[in-house]
Structures are given as structure tokens and as C-alpha cells.
Length: 69
Image (cartoon, rainbow, N blue to C red):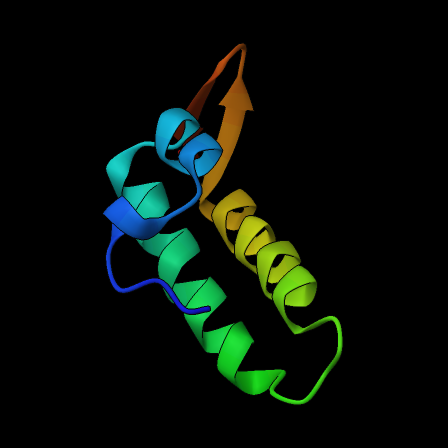
């Protein structure tokens, strides 16, 4: 189930990630979801890929996600 906007993302993603990280997550998820069509673990794979995309640009410091410098 692709996400049309950041408001459609899972609540934990909305709650913990800053807006730009949410954009990255949503775009990566949607792309991966489409790319894994027909895979029985399509949604699981898309979530893993989306988190990996976020972690390339953001790092968790304490309870907050901040952009890597």
C-alpha cells in the first residue's frame, strides 16, 4: 500500500522522523513497493528498504533523528 503523503505514513514514522526524513521514507517505500510487486513479503521489504534509505541521510541521536553532516 503506497503512501500518497506523509500524513498516510505509519504513526511511529510520523512521530519520530523529521519531515525531510519522512519524505525520504515515503519515496523509498513507494519505489520499493512497486519494485517488489508479486513478492509475498512486498510490504516488509519496502519498509526495510525505506528505513535503510533514511539511515543513509539521518542518524539517531538519543531519541531524535538528525541529518548527517
